[in-house]
Image 1 (cartoon, rainbow, N blue to C red):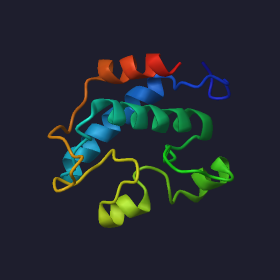
Image 2: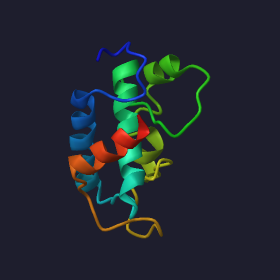
Image 3: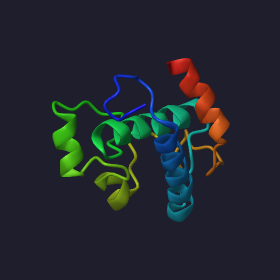
Length: 121
């Protein structure tokens, strides 16, 4: 699968890169994944798909008039500026412990993400 492929799914390489990033970043920032693992899986898949298509992990939970321009501007590339500055994650990927949707996990099995991804295809 090439980045220009019209598939709705990410490549395994990008998925694994975003999976590793998400776990490392959660631990480094003291944030947690959503209590519902499918939310985490869908967001990581979306980031990986944008990494393939745009060359950057643009936030998959926002609407953009021009995704390529937004990826180039980098404001919404994960971790986005609101996350880096205020620990505010619109996607609910990185949640502070006081968030009602925060789980207790900073890790998610890659198989869980791949299972959710296979149901998206």
